[in-house]
Length: 115
Length: 108
Image 1: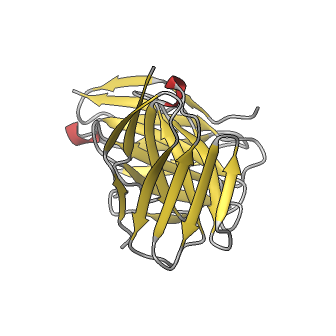
Image 2: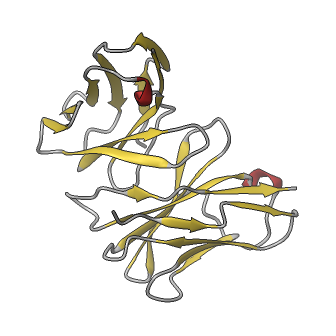
């Protein structure tokens, strides 16, 4: 069964460093998303991406964050200068379409630890 | 702004029992609602997607209902098993808004 994959599973970085989290969505999906979950808290929407553009973003997704689909398979989240409060699980998700049959499939997550 | 509440926050039931998890949301203008389970330290597994035009959706021992006008959804789990132990999350719409979930423990 097709699945969303994410690498790395765990990333440790120092405050102020740039990190890139990678995702390979399900191959025929068209919509891509990033969410994060700070330990013990709710899963929070960050950004949605369609047709090589951001379609929606939350207030969390500030100028320190960017997303890219550099080729036909990968979808990346970049954090330019990490802060301690960026420590969280980051989940990538994909779906076939945006309305109606919009079942989102999540990857296993990348645990980001900022020290 | 959509707010999602799930009650109870935690639930423990003996194996074999049927149970209902509740989800309420404040903005009834939704296209669909998705139920997930999350195992500790893991990602989210999609269980069911129920569209706004549907009242129920079934998958195996799971049945989800949706009452858009009252802003409520329920997830019914029949004949619970220890493997059902997880946190269950509901989330409406494309830009999924999550509550804190219900942590379910099935006692063997």
